Image (cartoon, rainbow, N blue to C red; front, side):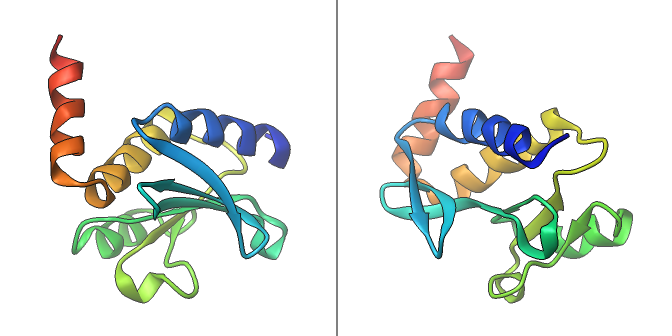
Length: 121
């Protein structure tokens, strides 16, 4: 998948979440909820990737399970963020789940709970 197509698909996933917005920071698209970053696009090293928050311990599990797809991103990897390469065969449902989990970790609790209520209807 071309980088532009991957970026467009990631953008649709991120912006479908409540109160999500896109802002360019550090010359790359970042996705935020109420001003806090929950995901970002990177073209570092010429390869498109997604960086997003992950619960404690998830980073080691994902990288250990598939180091060809997952990595610890620079600058935020030490905080537990996970990187996933968006070239090659991408499981977009998995990307969507990672983005939503990151959004839930970032969004205020009431907003995150409201999404769970909306989904159950």
